[in-house]
Image 1 (spheres, rainbow, N blue to C red):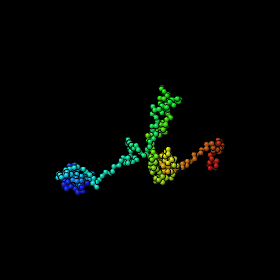
Image 2 (tube, rainbow, N blue to C red):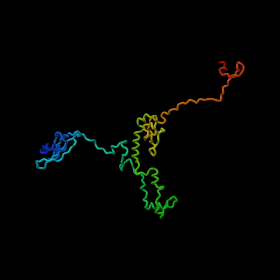
Image 3 (tube, rainbow, N blue to C red):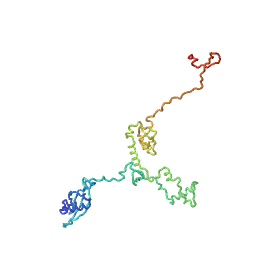
Image 4 (spheres, rainbow, N blue to C red):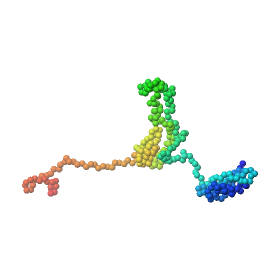
Length: 301
């Protein structure tokens, strides 16, 4: 059991402890003696103030001890320990918990754990029998008689199983042949995240004249997410290129304020088929005939 009362000889070895601390620290970085703490029978730790600028509240801890029935105190260890008011670094947090959206840059790699709840095993084609297994040989023998099979020399039993029409190839064509796919948990987590960012409760949606469900700029997603989300394709909208909820909305809605076309004046009509007649009158001196303009014809000569 640890003794609460420091050993007298060890407690009096302050000079020995200070010399050990000054030998370890930089010159002038060991301050005044704080206290002597009993760590056990004939084991005492002397604490000194640390004057290092970057170690506020830290203390030099020098442990001394002596053997049973011995009067010579020996040095055990010298370390720098934080005190109750020491300036400490924040608690270490794993990178997976520190990572935030937008932290990744070009060339960064983000590993995913093998048991990530957001993912589940997909179809990889592992259930396809090996090429030389009895099942594969039977499949090759069956397709060897078809007109589409590529027959190679040898028994039909050793014909290669065609990949055409296989489950793995169909899955690959549909985009399902992946090692892992999005799980139901991952799907719901993404939906909640998108709904919080661009959903009906956002301030923009609260002030919008209509929802994205009726907007012409909305491009619906595929699969089950199509029922609730789409991608905004309006370059002037705040959510351009983002996944938005169908209940989201903004002032850039396609039908929010349809601008009427400006009125265009009617084009001028020029009727070139009407010819205005000119009145003829005899020349006063009695000779030739002159043309009388419309004004003269009306008596305004």
